[in-house]
Length: 248
Image (cartoon, rainbow, N blue to C red):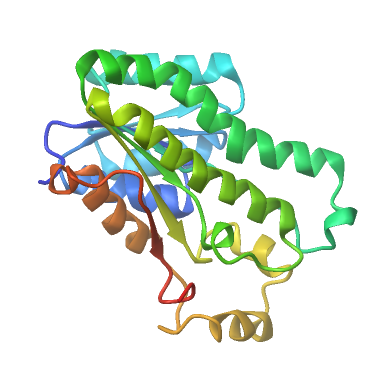
């Protein structure tokens, strides 16, 4: 029960890593608002997790939706202690000059702007209560970029730098900001990263991970639980790899 009494928001919690984080948080005593554009996915996860989880259909790139999300956490659970910025997208592997402008704008809106919008709503509340944790889900792509995913790589590099900058600014207010860098995992985004999900493509990618497997939603849930718990009260500004050694 490391998160007993805590209230958390997990964006993109209706599948993949977000689902794993939400499940671990509830198991450790937190009450969780699952915020996702996929209403059916969010409702499915919330129903599976029981009374301590609720879902909200919203778009992390829309300011009004983000405001509603934060207000909903307070109305449903009476406060907010943890924000997990997990929602993210990528583009298909291709030459950087071939990525369409619409895809580029979508990546920046969801991977970058969403963190800014959430900070505008959450940071004043965390400052006022002199506590809070913001966890940003970045990627090994921001540390060790892969060819043909240039704009996705760049967006995750931004997330890592933003995490460090936010941590330095907010530490005097008792607010911690941390990040996780997962390697590709068994999530709906895997096919996007690989270009095509075939045994051959999986084998080629797995050969770059020393531990020899993809990351799982449970892996991210376990790491997120630690970083967001009071056990990590002296840890801020880190971007921790959960990658089976890929970035070594």
